[in-house]
Length: 228
Ligand SMILES: Nc1ncnc2c1ncn2[C@@H]1O[C@H](COP(=O)(O)OP(=O)(O)OP(=O)(O)O)[C@@H](O)[C@H]1O
Ligand SMILES: [Mg+2]
Image: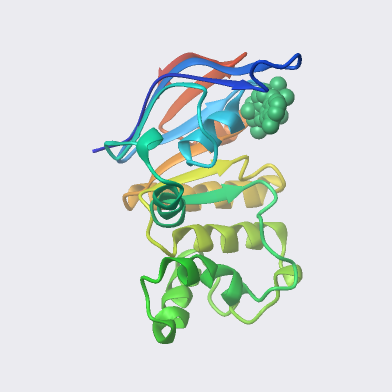
């Protein structure tokens, strides 16, 4: 099944103004079930811009985007919010966690919005996902008590609790040392083997080499698609 289908996607920031800037230039890009794709490219190439549009957090200036066969431009804000909450899990370089929240509260947050699971079952559900990322026994710890690698695993558990079909990770290992970066990538590989499609933005060739496919962006264009 095709999750993401993009045709000729362009993004112009500040369109019509003096500081207008074309960040994406007619990108064709797709993500199928089972994919694990690294997006590489230098700073300013448009990687995060592309990821934000895939994640329905931003909209293209022109071009067509279908998510699971649905035309995203025709969706209401509410429909896009449901996709962001249930269909896509986001993982960010700086983890996106509140420092003084408990691990359990951090992981359960997306469940509070989705209404999929009764409150009485949320804790057990979250503990299962914490176990999946190797953080058994961490539920009552506070986020600021954790190492960077542990924080990223909490963020991944949070990205997983609504069982999304796609994980979007923007420099997920950028703030981690080599060992923790490797462990986070092993975890993302395991999730991919278990059926999640994964798209990772990275500067790091070792990280990119752990993905099934690599593409490179340059000045808002996709430059190559090297099948590994
Ligand atoms: N909100 C914005 N308004 C105006 N220009 C923007 C905005 N966001 C990004 N840009 C510009 O668009 C270009 C692409 O930005 P983007 O963040 O997608 O790059 P990137 O490849 O993710 O870079 P990095 O590796 O540094 O994160 C950059 O030149 C940036 O300055
Ligand atoms: Mg970026």
